[in-house]
Every structure is written in C-alpha cells, then in structure tokens.
Length: 124
Image (cartoon, rainbow, N blue to C red):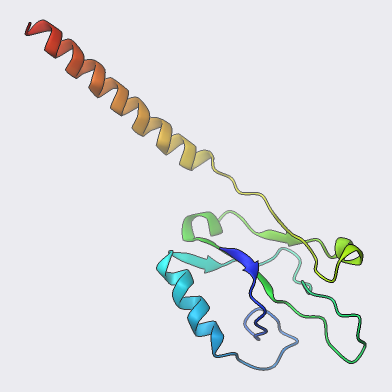
C-alpha cells in the first residue's frame, strides 16, 4: 500500500510534533492487509513547499507485507523534488522467495496431474 496520505504525524515525521487521529484508520487498514509501515533508507521529507512560512513534510508512505518489510526499505529521491513539490519514492522488492514458492506449488501440481493421468491410463 503506497501513496500520498496527506497526513502529517510524528510517527513518520519527527519534525511534526502532533498526532493525527487519521493514523488509527491507516493503521487498521494496514493491519487488515498484514502490512507494516516501511522505513525509508534516507529519512527526508517527501513533500517540499514553496512557501517559506510552511515546513517540508512527510506525507507519502509505503506499507509492505510483514514478510517483504524485513528485507526491503525504500529510498526518497529528494534530488528530484525540483521537478515537482514531491520527492519520488523508490523501492526494490525482492520476490525470489515468493517466486520459488509459486514454482514449487506449480511443479507439485504438475507432478500430481501426471501421476493421476498415468494412473488413469493404467486402469483403462
């Protein structure tokens, strides 16, 4: 779950000293997908303001499945914020283990079908 949530909160933006009640809703949704808030490799703002009276903020977040979170963090590309008032979030997700599990299931299914097919042809 990735997006611009437009919610400032001190859980992910240490420069913001308040707690938003909307965090509870986001956390409930994330929990329902067995997801956790990911931590950026470089904790910098994701939204940059043109107004010197305002503060830059962290409002773009990534939530990953708990299994993915253990091996993946994301990078905030603040060097691209000159193109927009937002910094792109970049992530590499390693799916080798997931692919391996899917391949194993497929191979097992194919082996069962072959076994069933050969058993059926022997009984004919």
